[in-house]
Image (cartoon, rainbow, N blue to C red; front, side, top):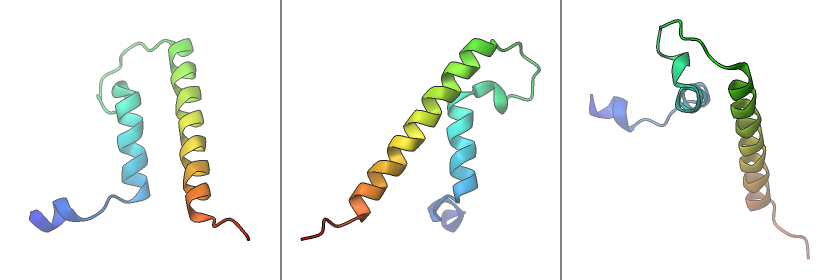
Length: 66
């Protein structure tokens, strides 16, 4: 039990947790009506934040040339 909790999340697990956090109805198992405009707005925000995270990680990993 302890070892399972300590292992790092895989990319897929991380993405699923992120999606369920943004779109709680994805993991609910219920057929709830969802507004299309709200979903598009959330997806747009999610896309922008993922791009920003990728660019930040890239900047941190690239050393400036002298």
